[in-house]
Image (cartoon, rainbow, N blue to C red; front, side, top):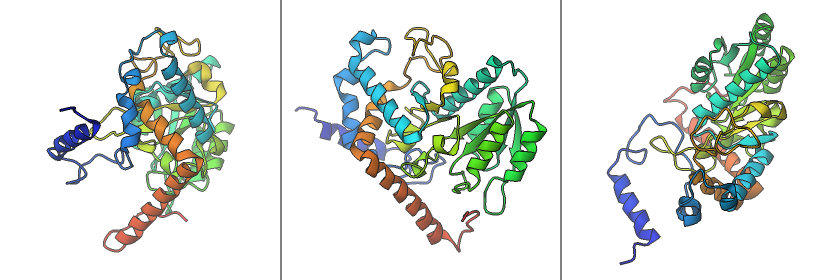
Length: 325
């Protein structure tokens, strides 16, 4: 009997039924599987041209993949309003590392060797201070007000206090509290005024598509969880794609690769392969292309509506900590 795609899906479902997952229990996983992983998006990863390609195949033998990567990066530039995208990082954590190292090298290229202070709001994603620590930065926490917003006056105070040593601020927008920071542009302007850079965490990008963008609010660099926002299944820890978007002034400092130079760059790799987990990129490519501009906008509107619906349903038996305005 021919083992069809339908039979394969049923087989995988039977295996999944034997495992502990969000379908039958509460597990401390987070949001990584909380979106549609449709079969039509998944099928292309099985195509021989994608699945059978070696990461170090000569570029003239990988023109289809090169075109796919170029197109998806162009689409992500349009979505985020960054100047360019790097598809190398395997995850959001790797993307954070790549982004902060780009900021660090940028400061060093200007002779600012002492800039090692990272402002981390208490509303930021939990990995932010961890990544800053790995990159050798000193973390200065920033408090939130009664509505869950970053205290802008404290950003100004700390940025001014550490002006000669300020490296960056790491912002999660909307925040981990679920709040759209009203003063986010002011925060970016303040940090820039004192010589720092803005890293914008991409954990909650699915609440921005078509409504706003990291580039619009003033971010210099930040990762995008393609496995959260753009449909790649990520339950259990992989595989993911933590592409980073960045502004032009950081371009010389983003990851390159010694075997397959990326735009001429041969150093700074954060993954073994030049384009990280490229094998799963067709999933996000298909999701973006089939959704289109209007579909991505609707996905964000629906996610915000659903979050507010759940908050209102749970309010009473559970305390809703922050709401914003």
